[in-house]
Image (spheres, rainbow, N blue to C red):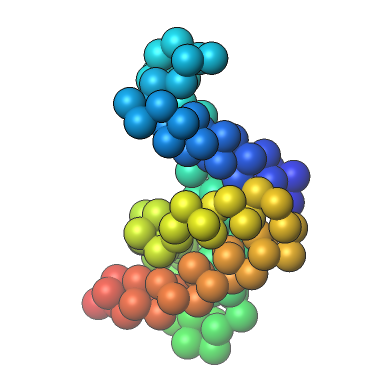
Length: 132
């Protein structure tokens, strides 16, 4: 998982660097903006997958979740986890900056802290918004 997040951060950083190097969103070495967009999209998708995994782990540790899931079937529990952690993953891009992604590409400890920070900021609000 750490290797995937590292790769995502590196791709996103390179893609962002390519965008800023020409001011047009098209890097001369790439020739088209599509490659940059694809790299950025891939990086963010991998970041979101890391956020989802951390969210599920954090959710399992919450007492409120443990109580609520007792009344659920396994399918209902998975559906609820998917909704809650999907919400957290969707909020993740709004909570990180270019500086965050650059630092995450360079420093594995920063990367772990960034994922923890993003999940912590969103988990409670997403959980609360999906309660009946």
